[in-house]
Image 1: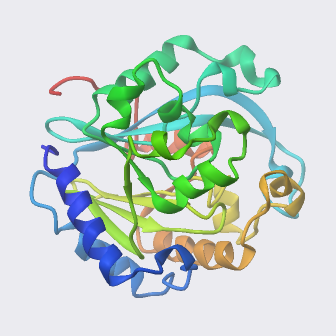
Image 2: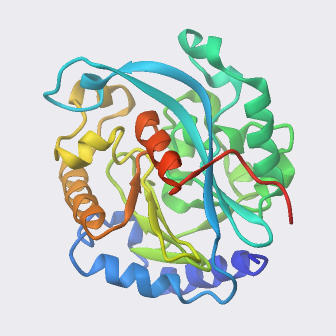
Image 3: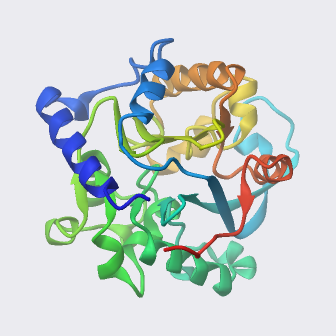
Length: 305
């Protein structure tokens, strides 16, 4: 049951904002050996049933070149997609990332865009108890900004102040720019460096790819731990080889804070070594592997809303 998660998120946000008024200037200095134990403790703070599974849908799959995502590797062909995750509770669910609608998809990728999958994503966003996004780029937040169910989605979508600031001042596409009146329709919070938002679920601030980037930690009833890392890594090779994205690939959206990303990649490598399942949002081969292992579940579950 995650009915109280909205109130939990807001209370936590108010507390953190009071304690850390300069959180928007925070870098990745919290990515130390102390962070994972702190996140694990925070996951136990919200009262209620822990989630039972993390499910996913892949929208508009395409073939990409690995060397555009990872420095210094061969130009191998790899699968990529726009991913959306459903954190499933005994009753209800939360959604991580919102993908995008057809109008935001590049012409070269529209052939594989599925209206059926998009409809399922929109249903999940509309009926979720809570929606969060890993960062403010169009392919992760677009579905929560442009939607046939926009008013319903806005009422339970949590955006950070840093995400809103980017969407107002320097969105990566002009179509997703928001004004102050629109931003006020969302749940806008600030925190530093972590915030529990539901039983077993914790947000972790992860500036670097964008100013508003964050990871989502999930601990299931089974004890399995997952980290949904958005675009901190485009491919798991970024984590395992400790290699960043080529600067030529990130220049188009203003580049990344490479020092921050380096700290986050080292921490993710250590978290994976500690048994946490790390999920890079666009790495289809790895997501498929995790589904085969039972760590992720393919398809959304709309029962017991």
